[in-house]
Image (cartoon, rainbow, N blue to C red; front, side):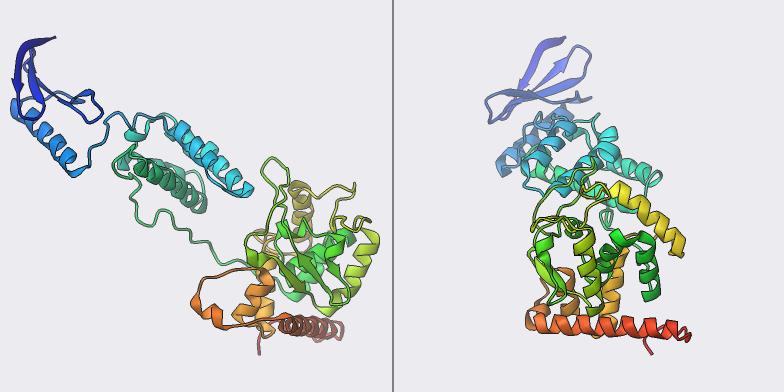
Length: 384
C-alpha cells in the first residue's frame, strides 16, 4: 500500500510507496486519472516519465495507454470484414490468418506486438513454409497494424523489416508447341479446348470457368470474356468481375482452333444459349480438385516438369505471342492485363491487330506440326 506522502507538480503528481518505489499519475484529456504502468526506483525517474507525457500532450501526440489493449484476432477479423474486397482476396486473407498468423498473434493485444516478436514470428514461418506465403502473410499483418496506427490504438507499426513483404517468384517454365498439343490430347476431348484457350488466348482459369456458349464467335474465331468465376478454398465458385477492366475483352484465337470450337459446342458445352462452355462429365461446373487430378496425370504422361502448373500455359501464351510479333501492348490486351505506365498510353492494339497476332500464331503452329510430320524435328518455337 502507498503512504500518504505525495508530491504535487504543475502537471500530475508523484507518490512514494512504503516499499520505497515511486509511481506517477496525471489527469488526461479524457477526464480520467491515468497512472504509470510501472513503478520507478527514484522520484526523478517518475518525474521524467511525467515530463514525457506532458510533452506528448503539448504536441498532440498523447494516446490513451489502454487504447492498444485490443485483441489482435478480434481487430484483424473486423479489419477484413470492413473492407470492400473481392471474394478471392477475402478467401486468401482468411487462409493466411488461420494458418500462418493467428496461431501466434491471437495471444497478443495490439500493444503487445513488438518488432522483436514480429521478427521471431517471421523467422519461424520461414522455417516451416515457403517465402512467397510468408511475404503475403507479413504484408497482411503490416496492413492491419498500419490501420491500428491510423486508429490511434498503437503509436507505431512494429512491422519494420525491410523487404519482408516482397515476393521473388522464380521464372515460370514455358511449354513448346509440341508439349501443348501433347497435354491437350492427354487431357481428352472434353478438356483439350480449355488447354488451347489457356495457352493461345491466354485466358485465366477463372475466366475459362465462366465462358458461355454465347461468348463463342465462330466467324471471328474467338471468345468474349465478360465475367470470372474463381473457386474458393471451400470448393465454391463465386461469380464476379474480371481481375480488372482490361480483363473484359474479346480474345481472337488462331484459325486452327475453329474446328475445336465447333466440335466442343456440339459435343460438350451446355445446350442453352447462356450455357457454360466447360462442364464436367456429370454436367456440373468443373472443380479445381477434380480438374487438378486430370491435369497432373496428363502433365506426367507427356513429360512436362512437375512444377508446370495449368496457369503456366498462360505464361506460354505470352511468350509465343511475343515471338509471333506481338508488342508488349498487344500481349497485355490479349491477356487482359492493365498497367499504369505512361508509355502504354501511346500504344494501340485494336481488333485487326489482334487478328494478325492470332493469324501469326496459327501459321507458326501449323508450320511446326508440318515439320514434325515430315520428320524434320525442327523446333520452330526458338527464334533463328
